[in-house]
Image 1 (tube, rainbow, N blue to C red):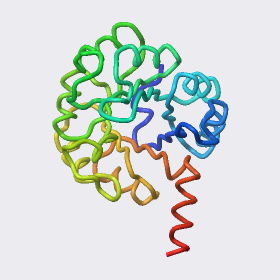
Image 2: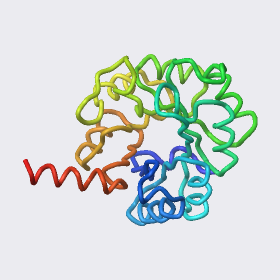
Image 3: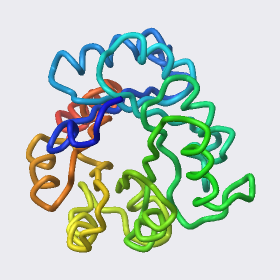
Image 4: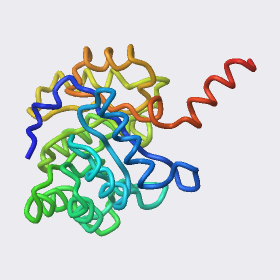
Length: 224
């Protein structure tokens, strides 16, 4: 079992493709994860049970797994059933919605996290959107908290880049759990800024693993 300290000040790469896209295939995601690890990723974050299984078999680094079910509200690993399935598929860390919103199965965040800890060896990463979410998630027993949902709930405005102000506020609390920066980190410089703001590690997804968006950035810039 890996230790969280091995992820300190490292890059975690999110290897995900959206439904209907050409790359939405577990084999492709496994190859992308392998490429990311060759490039220096210390861990990878993947979505879907088949992807978790494929990536776990393809790389030696820790796998952060999640299961998106739906598009609105609580949809990132929304229930205990989803969380347990991610762990059983091979995720070292289960990432789930860590907000204070009502969960579809009626369980509290604490009950969900306890269920994962009691029935599996996986750690839990709570994807949060505000300081209050983080405080609640830590109280509920989350092993890791992330800023994944900053700007995607009603509590904070969506920033152009990473929400460095939120990172700084969380880091200043010294809560005793790793705070991972995730969301709208599009350049190496922004990754550095996130570490300087207090992030334990940095997750980058779109800017590394989503060629459709990267291509659009260039195409729009050239046509402006």
